[in-house]
Image (cartoon, rainbow, N blue to C red; front, side, top):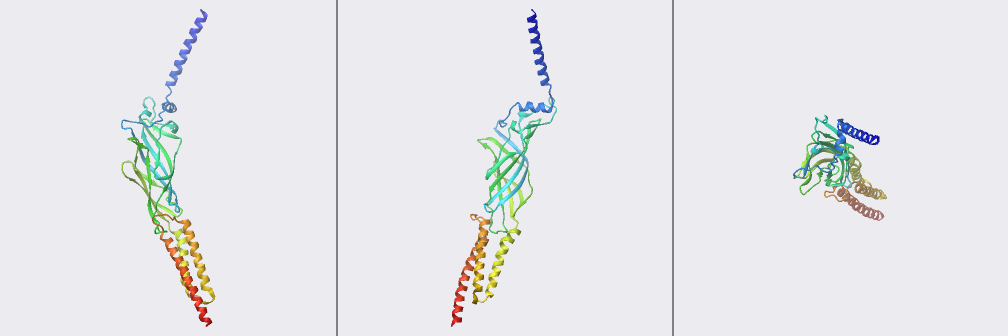
Length: 315
């Protein structure tokens, strides 16, 4: 009898303890308890409605040109985007949890991926390990995209060249399912890097699934002019002045040979600095080649004239 009473007491105590713990768990109404409640739902798949498409609003994009590789004709850029989308299954009743927003880890919530479709190298990372969820199920998150894009810049008037380079941004979508992006505003920051300057960055939409950031690029001609154009002009002036040197004594021929070597080094520098397979190759390269050939021809003519001059002097 004593043993049975002890068993019944233990059972009743266990029931009361279980009920008390469950009641304590349900009465937790802190913001952290709200976060744990949403995390336990484990909604790691894309929110899906009747048409199988989720709209991602992008109210703000911050565009920055990191560098322009003139030799390879590539634009290296960084894009910071703020994303908004709605997941009804992450909403809660504000009468039960009296908070309008809560912070959740990115790893426990589905997040969209953004691709630069014309990028050679593209990486996307989260700007933070956390994101914000509002009581109506709206999720706000920020991402950072680094992309290297092929950019066929028109360099015909180098170093006074300028052109526009498109950066194509898309999300995954196939057979009517996936995500669509709704861009609103883009802001350009820090537009000067090296010999290039970013004049503007604007949004352009082509069709329902093609969005572009049009980037206006322009070369800051001061440095290329001093390092490339000015030496070429000085060499041409020196070649003109060389006609005043006497034919006898070989001074003119030595000077001409020095000019030809100078133009050859100039061409080497141009080949290292400028692309060779561009659709609009810089005219400065063709001009330097023609000047080198002209100098070589005039040097041969001057050599023949010097030989004839010595022959006449000998007679």
